[in-house]
Length: 281
Length: 322
Image (tube, rainbow over all chains, first blue to last red; front, side):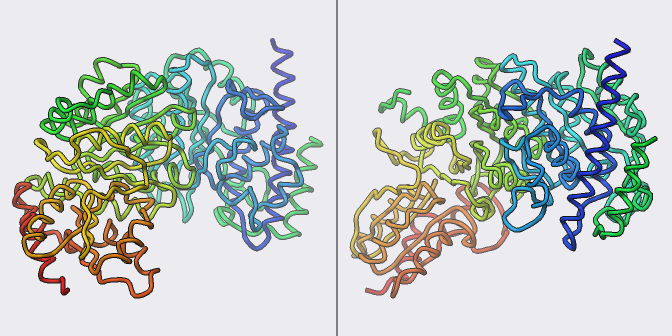
C-alpha cells in the first residue's frame, strides 16, 4: 500500500513536470495571441494527480463509455487540459503547437471533441458544474460507476449558475460527482477579495450539504490522499484547493499579469531552466 | 398515440399545456431514454401525471433555469432523449447563454418547450408574456423553432422533435379551449409549412395560436372580395423558403401574423427570404409593435395588439391595393 502510494506520488510528480513543460511550449506557440498562463499553472498539480492516478480512461478509445468524465469549467485554463490530454495519448504532441492558430482544434477555450477527450465546450464561466450534474445523473440512471470530475475557478464562483448547480447536486444525491475549486485568490482584474469576496467557500458548500475538504492544491501527497480516501463518501464532494496562480515559475507565481500574457522566448528559456532545477531536486 | 375526433376535442379543451403532459406520457411508453426536466412547473406544464407515473424519467430542478439547460445538456451528451419545460421567458431568454453554448455551439440535442408563450398570460404582465423568444432563439445557429397551431399539432411537434433528436425550441401559444385547426391526422414535417387555404390575392403566413385567427380573418376578407391564401408556418426555423418564394410569385401582398414582437419573429424570418426575391410584394407585419403596453386578459391583449380576426382583416384591407 505504502509502496504503491510512493510509486503514484512519483508518477504524479513526473506528470506535473511534463504538464508544466507542455504549458510552456504551448504558451510560446501562442506568441502574441497570449495565453491564460497563470490559471493553467494553478491547477497543474490537481490535473496531474487526476490524470495520472485517478481518472479511468482507455488509452485506445477516448469514447469508452465507462470512462470517468472530466470537465474543465474554467475553460480558459485549457493549457493544462490540452497538456494532460496529450500526456495520456489523446492529443498528439505536435498538435499542441497549433494552439490558438487558425482553424485549430485547440482554441483558447476548449471546444467539444470527444475523440481528443474534450467532453464539452467551456469558457463561458459557470456552466461546467451543471453539465457535470447531467453526466452524474446519466451514470446513476444507467447504473454505471463512472465518476465525474469538475474543475471550477474561484473567480468563476461569482456566477449565479454555479450556486444553482451547487444547490442541485446534493438534492439529486450525486455521490459520483467531484468538484475541485482552484482557490488561487485571483481573477481577471485583481484579487477575489477586492472584486467580489467569496468568503468561506468550504462553509458555503458545506451548508449546501456537500462533503467538503480544504487543502494545499500544490501538495501532491495531500491531493492524492484526498482522492484516495474520499471515494466512498456518499455525498457530492467539494475540494477547495488553495493554490498559487502561475505556480511553478518565479516570474509568474502570484503575479496576476500572467492571467493572460505573452510568454517571450527569454521567459520560456528561464521557465525551462527552472523546471529542470525543480526536477533535479 | 390515438389521434381521433374524441382525443382532438379533449386536447383542444385542455389546451396546449395539458396536451404537452399527455403527449409526454405517451412518448415515455415508446422512448426508453426519455427524460423530462422542469423548473417547478410540473403542474403548469400538465406533467403531474407524468411525474407520478414515470418518477425515474422526471427530474425536478427547482426554479433555476441556467442549471436546467446545463443538466439537460449533460444528459443529452450521454444520449438521453431530453425534454425541458418551463414558462417561455424562463425557458429561453433567462438561460439564453446556456442555450447558445450547449445546444447551439455544442449541438447537444435538447428539446425545450416554452409554455404559455405569446400573450396568453397578459393578466400577469410582460414578465410572463413572451414576445421575444423567437427572436432570441432564431439568432442562435442550429436551433429549430416550432410553433404549433393547435393542440393536435403540439402532440405532433413534440413527437417529431423528440424522435428526430435535434436541438429545438417548441413554442406553445394559446390557452385552454384552444380552437381546433386540425380535425384529423395529417403529415407534420419539421421545416415544411402547410397551406390551409388557397387564395390568389394575398398570402397570410401565420404561426401558433394566430393560425386559427388568420383562417377566420380570411373569411371576412373573402366577403370583401380579397382572396387570401393561409399558410401555417409551424416551423419558424428553418423557415420554408419555397413557401415564401411561391407566395411572392403568386400573390400581391405578404402578411405575417404572430403573437410576438414584429422584430425578430416570423415576420422577420419571412422578410429575410423575401429580400432575396426580385420585385417581391410588400409585406405587412402583424404582431406586437415593439412595445410593452398595458396588460389585461388574453382577449384584451389580442385586441390591443390588433390580433383579433376583425382587426387582422381591417389592417389587411387598409394595406391591400388590387
